[in-house]
Length: 251
Image (cartoon, rainbow, N blue to C red; front, side, top):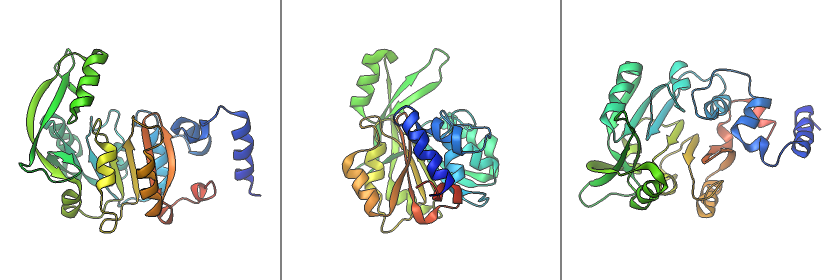
């Protein structure tokens, strides 16, 4: 038995349940210490998956900020290019300012399938400083946030693009990051994996910890495996695309 696998088995028996599947737990033990820009160190695990790759391409849907709580900034710093899609023009302007020619931006709401009018209502919550920190296309999510103390929301109509039409416009995606407050799993489930090969997908799933059962089955049938779960974020990756022997030894 390999030493690292033996150590993992020992740790699984003495550490809290699920610790090693949490981004912090995995990072603390198996990933070399580097600066993380994600909320819970997710970018370090994703970066370990790709090894020392310098020429990758990411698609960041529902971006919060270019450097703060960003799952893609670490890859930008390592030379990757990418596309950022968001419904807030102010945030997109920040990405262009800070990532310059290495990023393309698109103001649109990414949806599972085409809509008749190619536009939808977005529900926007603002901080006291006027920053829209939470936007969602899902009315039920907006009402839930409102009832949980986020205050009133404003409604704005914005253009939409379905996920497969978006992927068709872009280069091959190595890292897909999705955080769109309530529609994440629906968008991932709508991806035509027969047409588009994506090496790794990181998305939010606050409804079912670890991903919805039907979506999990679909991803596994397409060759994906569960890399980690961190809070409400779930990560699936193509095993054949792993570029780091340390991670290969652990799965």
